[in-house]
Amino acid sequence: MSTQWSRQEPLVSVVMAVHNGAATLASTLASILEQQVDGPLELLVLNDGSTDGTKLLLDQVAAADSRLRVWHRPQRGLTASLIELCEQARAPFIARQDAGDRSLPGRLLRQLSHLQRHPAASLCSCHARFVLSAAASDGAGLVLHQATPSAEQLRDGLTGPAHHGAVMMRTASYHQVGGYRPMFRFAQDIDLWSRLVETGTHDVIPEILYEAEVNAGSISGVQGPEQRRFHHVICCATRARRAGRSEQPWLQRAERLSQHCRRRPAGSRRRARGTYFIACCLLPAHPDLARTHLQSALALDPTHLRARLRLALLESH
Image 1 (cartoon, helix red, strand yellow):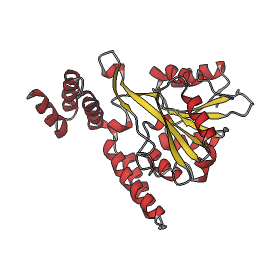
Image 2 (cartoon, rainbow, N blue to C red; image 1 turned 45 degrees about the vertical axis):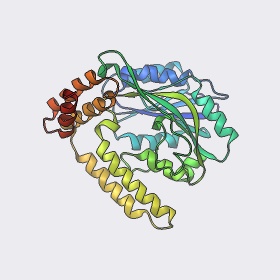
Image 3 (tube, rainbow, N blue to C red; image 1 turned 135 degrees about the vertical axis):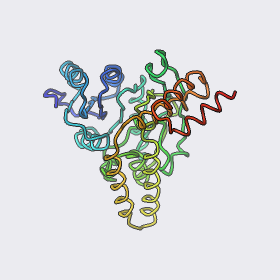
Image 4 (cartoon, rainbow, N blue to C red; image 1 turned 90 degrees about the vertical axis):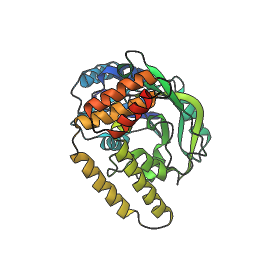
């Protein structure tokens, strides 16, 4: 942990975990540290077992800016990292940020002001745009799409906001519902939102204030099937909880799923999943680039049936 930080109590704590994110980390840190809020800000970053230049960069920035607090430890995954970070947050509001993404100017101030004016809200998100990484788009980042969910769509807590990193929540509400839960290796955010909306509303700033990078190593790309299994468990646990029944059987199932995910190797099939995910993102507007990624996915995993079918459909047009 960095040994120097502001002794003044912060108004907003921004929490972020990073694993091997040195290539884009400077931009992400700057996007938070350059935010203007009506009070002190702290940025809490946990280096989750990185083996690249992440540690050095974090230590350098922390030495120059006392608002950045840094921890280094062996890799334990995103959920464990977020639990640790939120326990260290000193502010009445916690904002999320993902490594590799950027918070656009005004994001934190807009969300903070909204939560201060609307005490019935437990959390507040904003709209987001998704950009394909330069590495996956032949050197030129491409805007793939924008996510603009409404408060009505997010009311039940089982549909996620525009992006996990685009959320700010009340620290008191976070602790009231028990925070992130360790048995959810994936979809830990949906599990949290499903409980937060039981204590207050999920409000939305209808502006694009967050930019998320899409890459082949993203959880949505590589762990999509696992995420869907966790989401089913969360829906079942939520229905049980809201009906006054125990959710414990579903939490036990989530733990078994997490153990299963930990045992599964990465391998070429995992990389093929991520490459296929990028191809699907590209298909609507960039079919030629999508074709290249579909071919790469099949080279990594010749048994990838969906990639083969999509490539055949693309070639037939």
